[in-house]
Length: 488
Ligand code: PLP
Image (cartoon, rainbow, N blue to C red; front, side, top):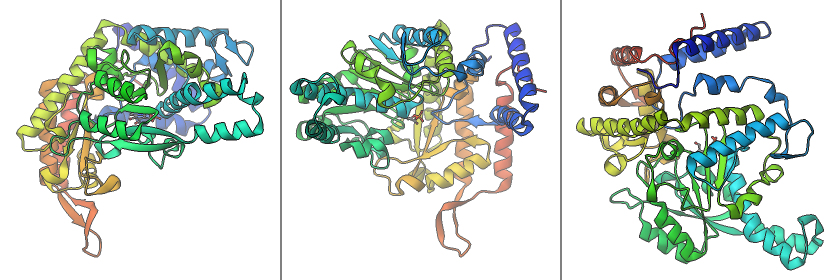
């Protein structure tokens, strides 16, 4: 039973013909690209994909991206473009925004960001425009920045670049775009981090409140890439209000769980945050891209994403966002989202039963973080490589106060959105927990060529890796990816 949206066998057969024809056309120009596309499907079919930020988009979503919308420039907003001839782009962008508003219950939606990082930049600058730029213009009696004197402009530029932001620390599961120095957000803002309780690994709202009172940020960012628990956005908003901050939630990872109504009430960010950003390609299962949702007070500023941060939008991707969001509005998506969480729990229980230590002792969402250092005496890098050699694709990830740093790490992050799309259920998750435990228990830290202990090298008998690989392949053979699509 597959949960890749496939309304009927006839649809799969039609999609198969479409993909085959497309490859034939591409092969006529650059056969190596056609081969790589075909090989990618073969690889994805073989992989036991546990990367928490990946998924499998539907054939309809994929096919929507390969057309002449790609050729169009459409800077501006719906019905108000800097280029002529945008009526069809208007149609698809308006549909994407309408589906997003309806699906998430948002007052406003902006479908242009090309990625999650772009969505976050749009959101930061929308808040800065609302809270720093607009009052400065008003004080100067200017309508727009070009009307300011050189001196007023210099003052405004300094003010825009000198605001405070409070975001979740990277090792507690936050994202680079939440104010960290290697990312532009860390260069734009004076950032401080909040973390998790060292004992429980859970978000410590009272510590966060105390930091917010002391630091008085303009923006509090909630949301994560590697936190396996729920976040209470009602409390986050209460803290933000108390210190006069705008609450921004980056739901890139868990947007599918919000869309599928698994995260509701205090755990749904949309009613609580003034501005919410997301990617569309992770648990939401759409095309690669980003999106911003906001309340009406920020709508005009968000719509200035182009030219503020973005260039021309990607109309073919906005069209695919509209298709994927239409899919996410179907009842079957709720079922999917619930299965994602059920599967993550089953994986957690299977791992813990076999002796693995999980950060926070389990999960409430789509991901788990295994502490491979304390469970198996490995770095994340060693564990990731050993699992890959055994046909299991994961990524290493820092854990709170990680002694091995952000490169080698002590954690492995695993998520269930992709395998759930493929149709695997809780029984299979237990088997996968067994495979992971078998590999990690059989893996030893390695040494360099000179015999010095290495955080990168691992030792795993080929026989074990091959056996696990075969078991993974056998398991997946019962859950064909894109059934009915045959490129041969
Ligand atoms: N925000 C969060 C929480 C993420 O996890 C990610 C990506 O992993 C991003 C933003 C950035 O998304 P993108 O890779 O589409 O720029």
